[in-house]
Image (cartoon, rainbow, N blue to C red; front, side, top):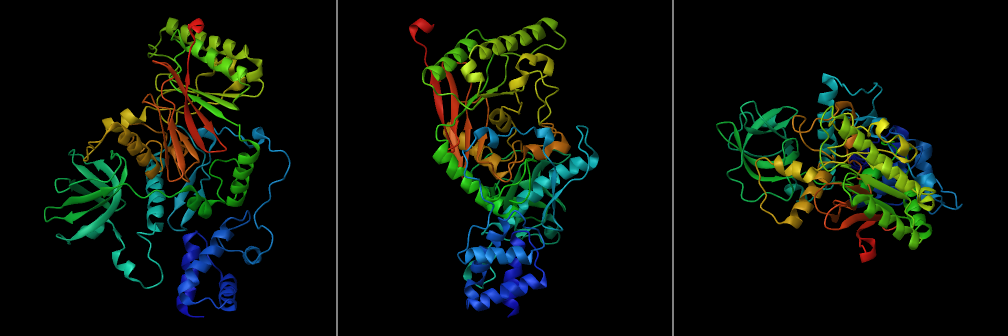
Length: 524
């Protein structure tokens, strides 16, 4: 077996964060010889085996020979190598989990091992100087490893003309003494102490000059966002930008094929085979399953409870009961003054009224899960992300039905903090740019800590890697539905306004649709 074929085998498995011992390497060589695979097909053939190996429940980083043999037998036409899902009746409650951001395990990216490692340290809201650094470093490394795996940056082992057109990432340290050269850098957009816009990576910073830039790529560029920047390094130490773009987004299937064995949510890892089988069964057996999402449910607005009552009535009349109803804040149309006892009392009374309304529909409360999501103006512990649940004393009568998650007005926040590149785009493009930016950055809040404070020990709870199936951007901005790289992102808009609007998400189709509650004259 030639050194080239061995290097190819090792490279392919390393791409999926696996290492090969001599026995596993020899076994793969025997497979290639037995099937008389030519050199130009080695990479493709081994990639097929590596992908299937990574789907296994018992796949480990150091490739197991026994698992590898089982994978080969499966690919030869044997039975499915993945875990089988029992063919009993699919119970949606048995597959529905509500994950608290503060219960999610922390996984650090290890550049040395080329994979994720679970943190053994106890997490606290205070954090440490080390955890603040690690939060940013993890964000950078997670994005960087997806960039380097992208076909435009990762060369094939086969000689080809395409290798000449590959983009090679350089570090800021490579700029020293090389004025006049053109480079492609990857780093975080930030400001220096002097207020100059810079690109920062692990090795240093360089000041950016956007004057030569004609047209940026799509997306919103803010301080704290990671960007790919191409340009020329000048004699005075500046970097003249000729092109800037967000890192390429890695779709869910690709990420899951590599890291499917990692339990990011703390609810147990599933393989791609299990995911595919579950998705198929949901389409066949739970086609009517739906989730409702409402945002800006102002309980102090006189029409809000009427709108909710009409929505519940429609559900009963049409025998269409959602499995989950998510009510997002703000639950008040204006902030609550600190220490204002009367405002706090009204705030609690509004939740009591909501509880009474929900309790008056036993057909809904019997099988529907209610989630309450605090907004920026609601009485959570503070405004730091991820946001703590609503204070328990305020929602005691709803406690048996709630799980709190976070919600933020990200469109306004992102537009307020654009740096360097100011987009001149239409409204529809802004929605698409916001979605693209969040998913390309693999993070719900790609801003620096001075703009939006984040608990450093819980920054991982805001990651969007691997990409979820759907993201609900509960924003006071107008409603929209966009699918990007297979991830469906939608914003329900404000429930209270000219009309009562909300979004319905259907797991079977993985799509959402806007719903509007219309009142008859007798309802008014």
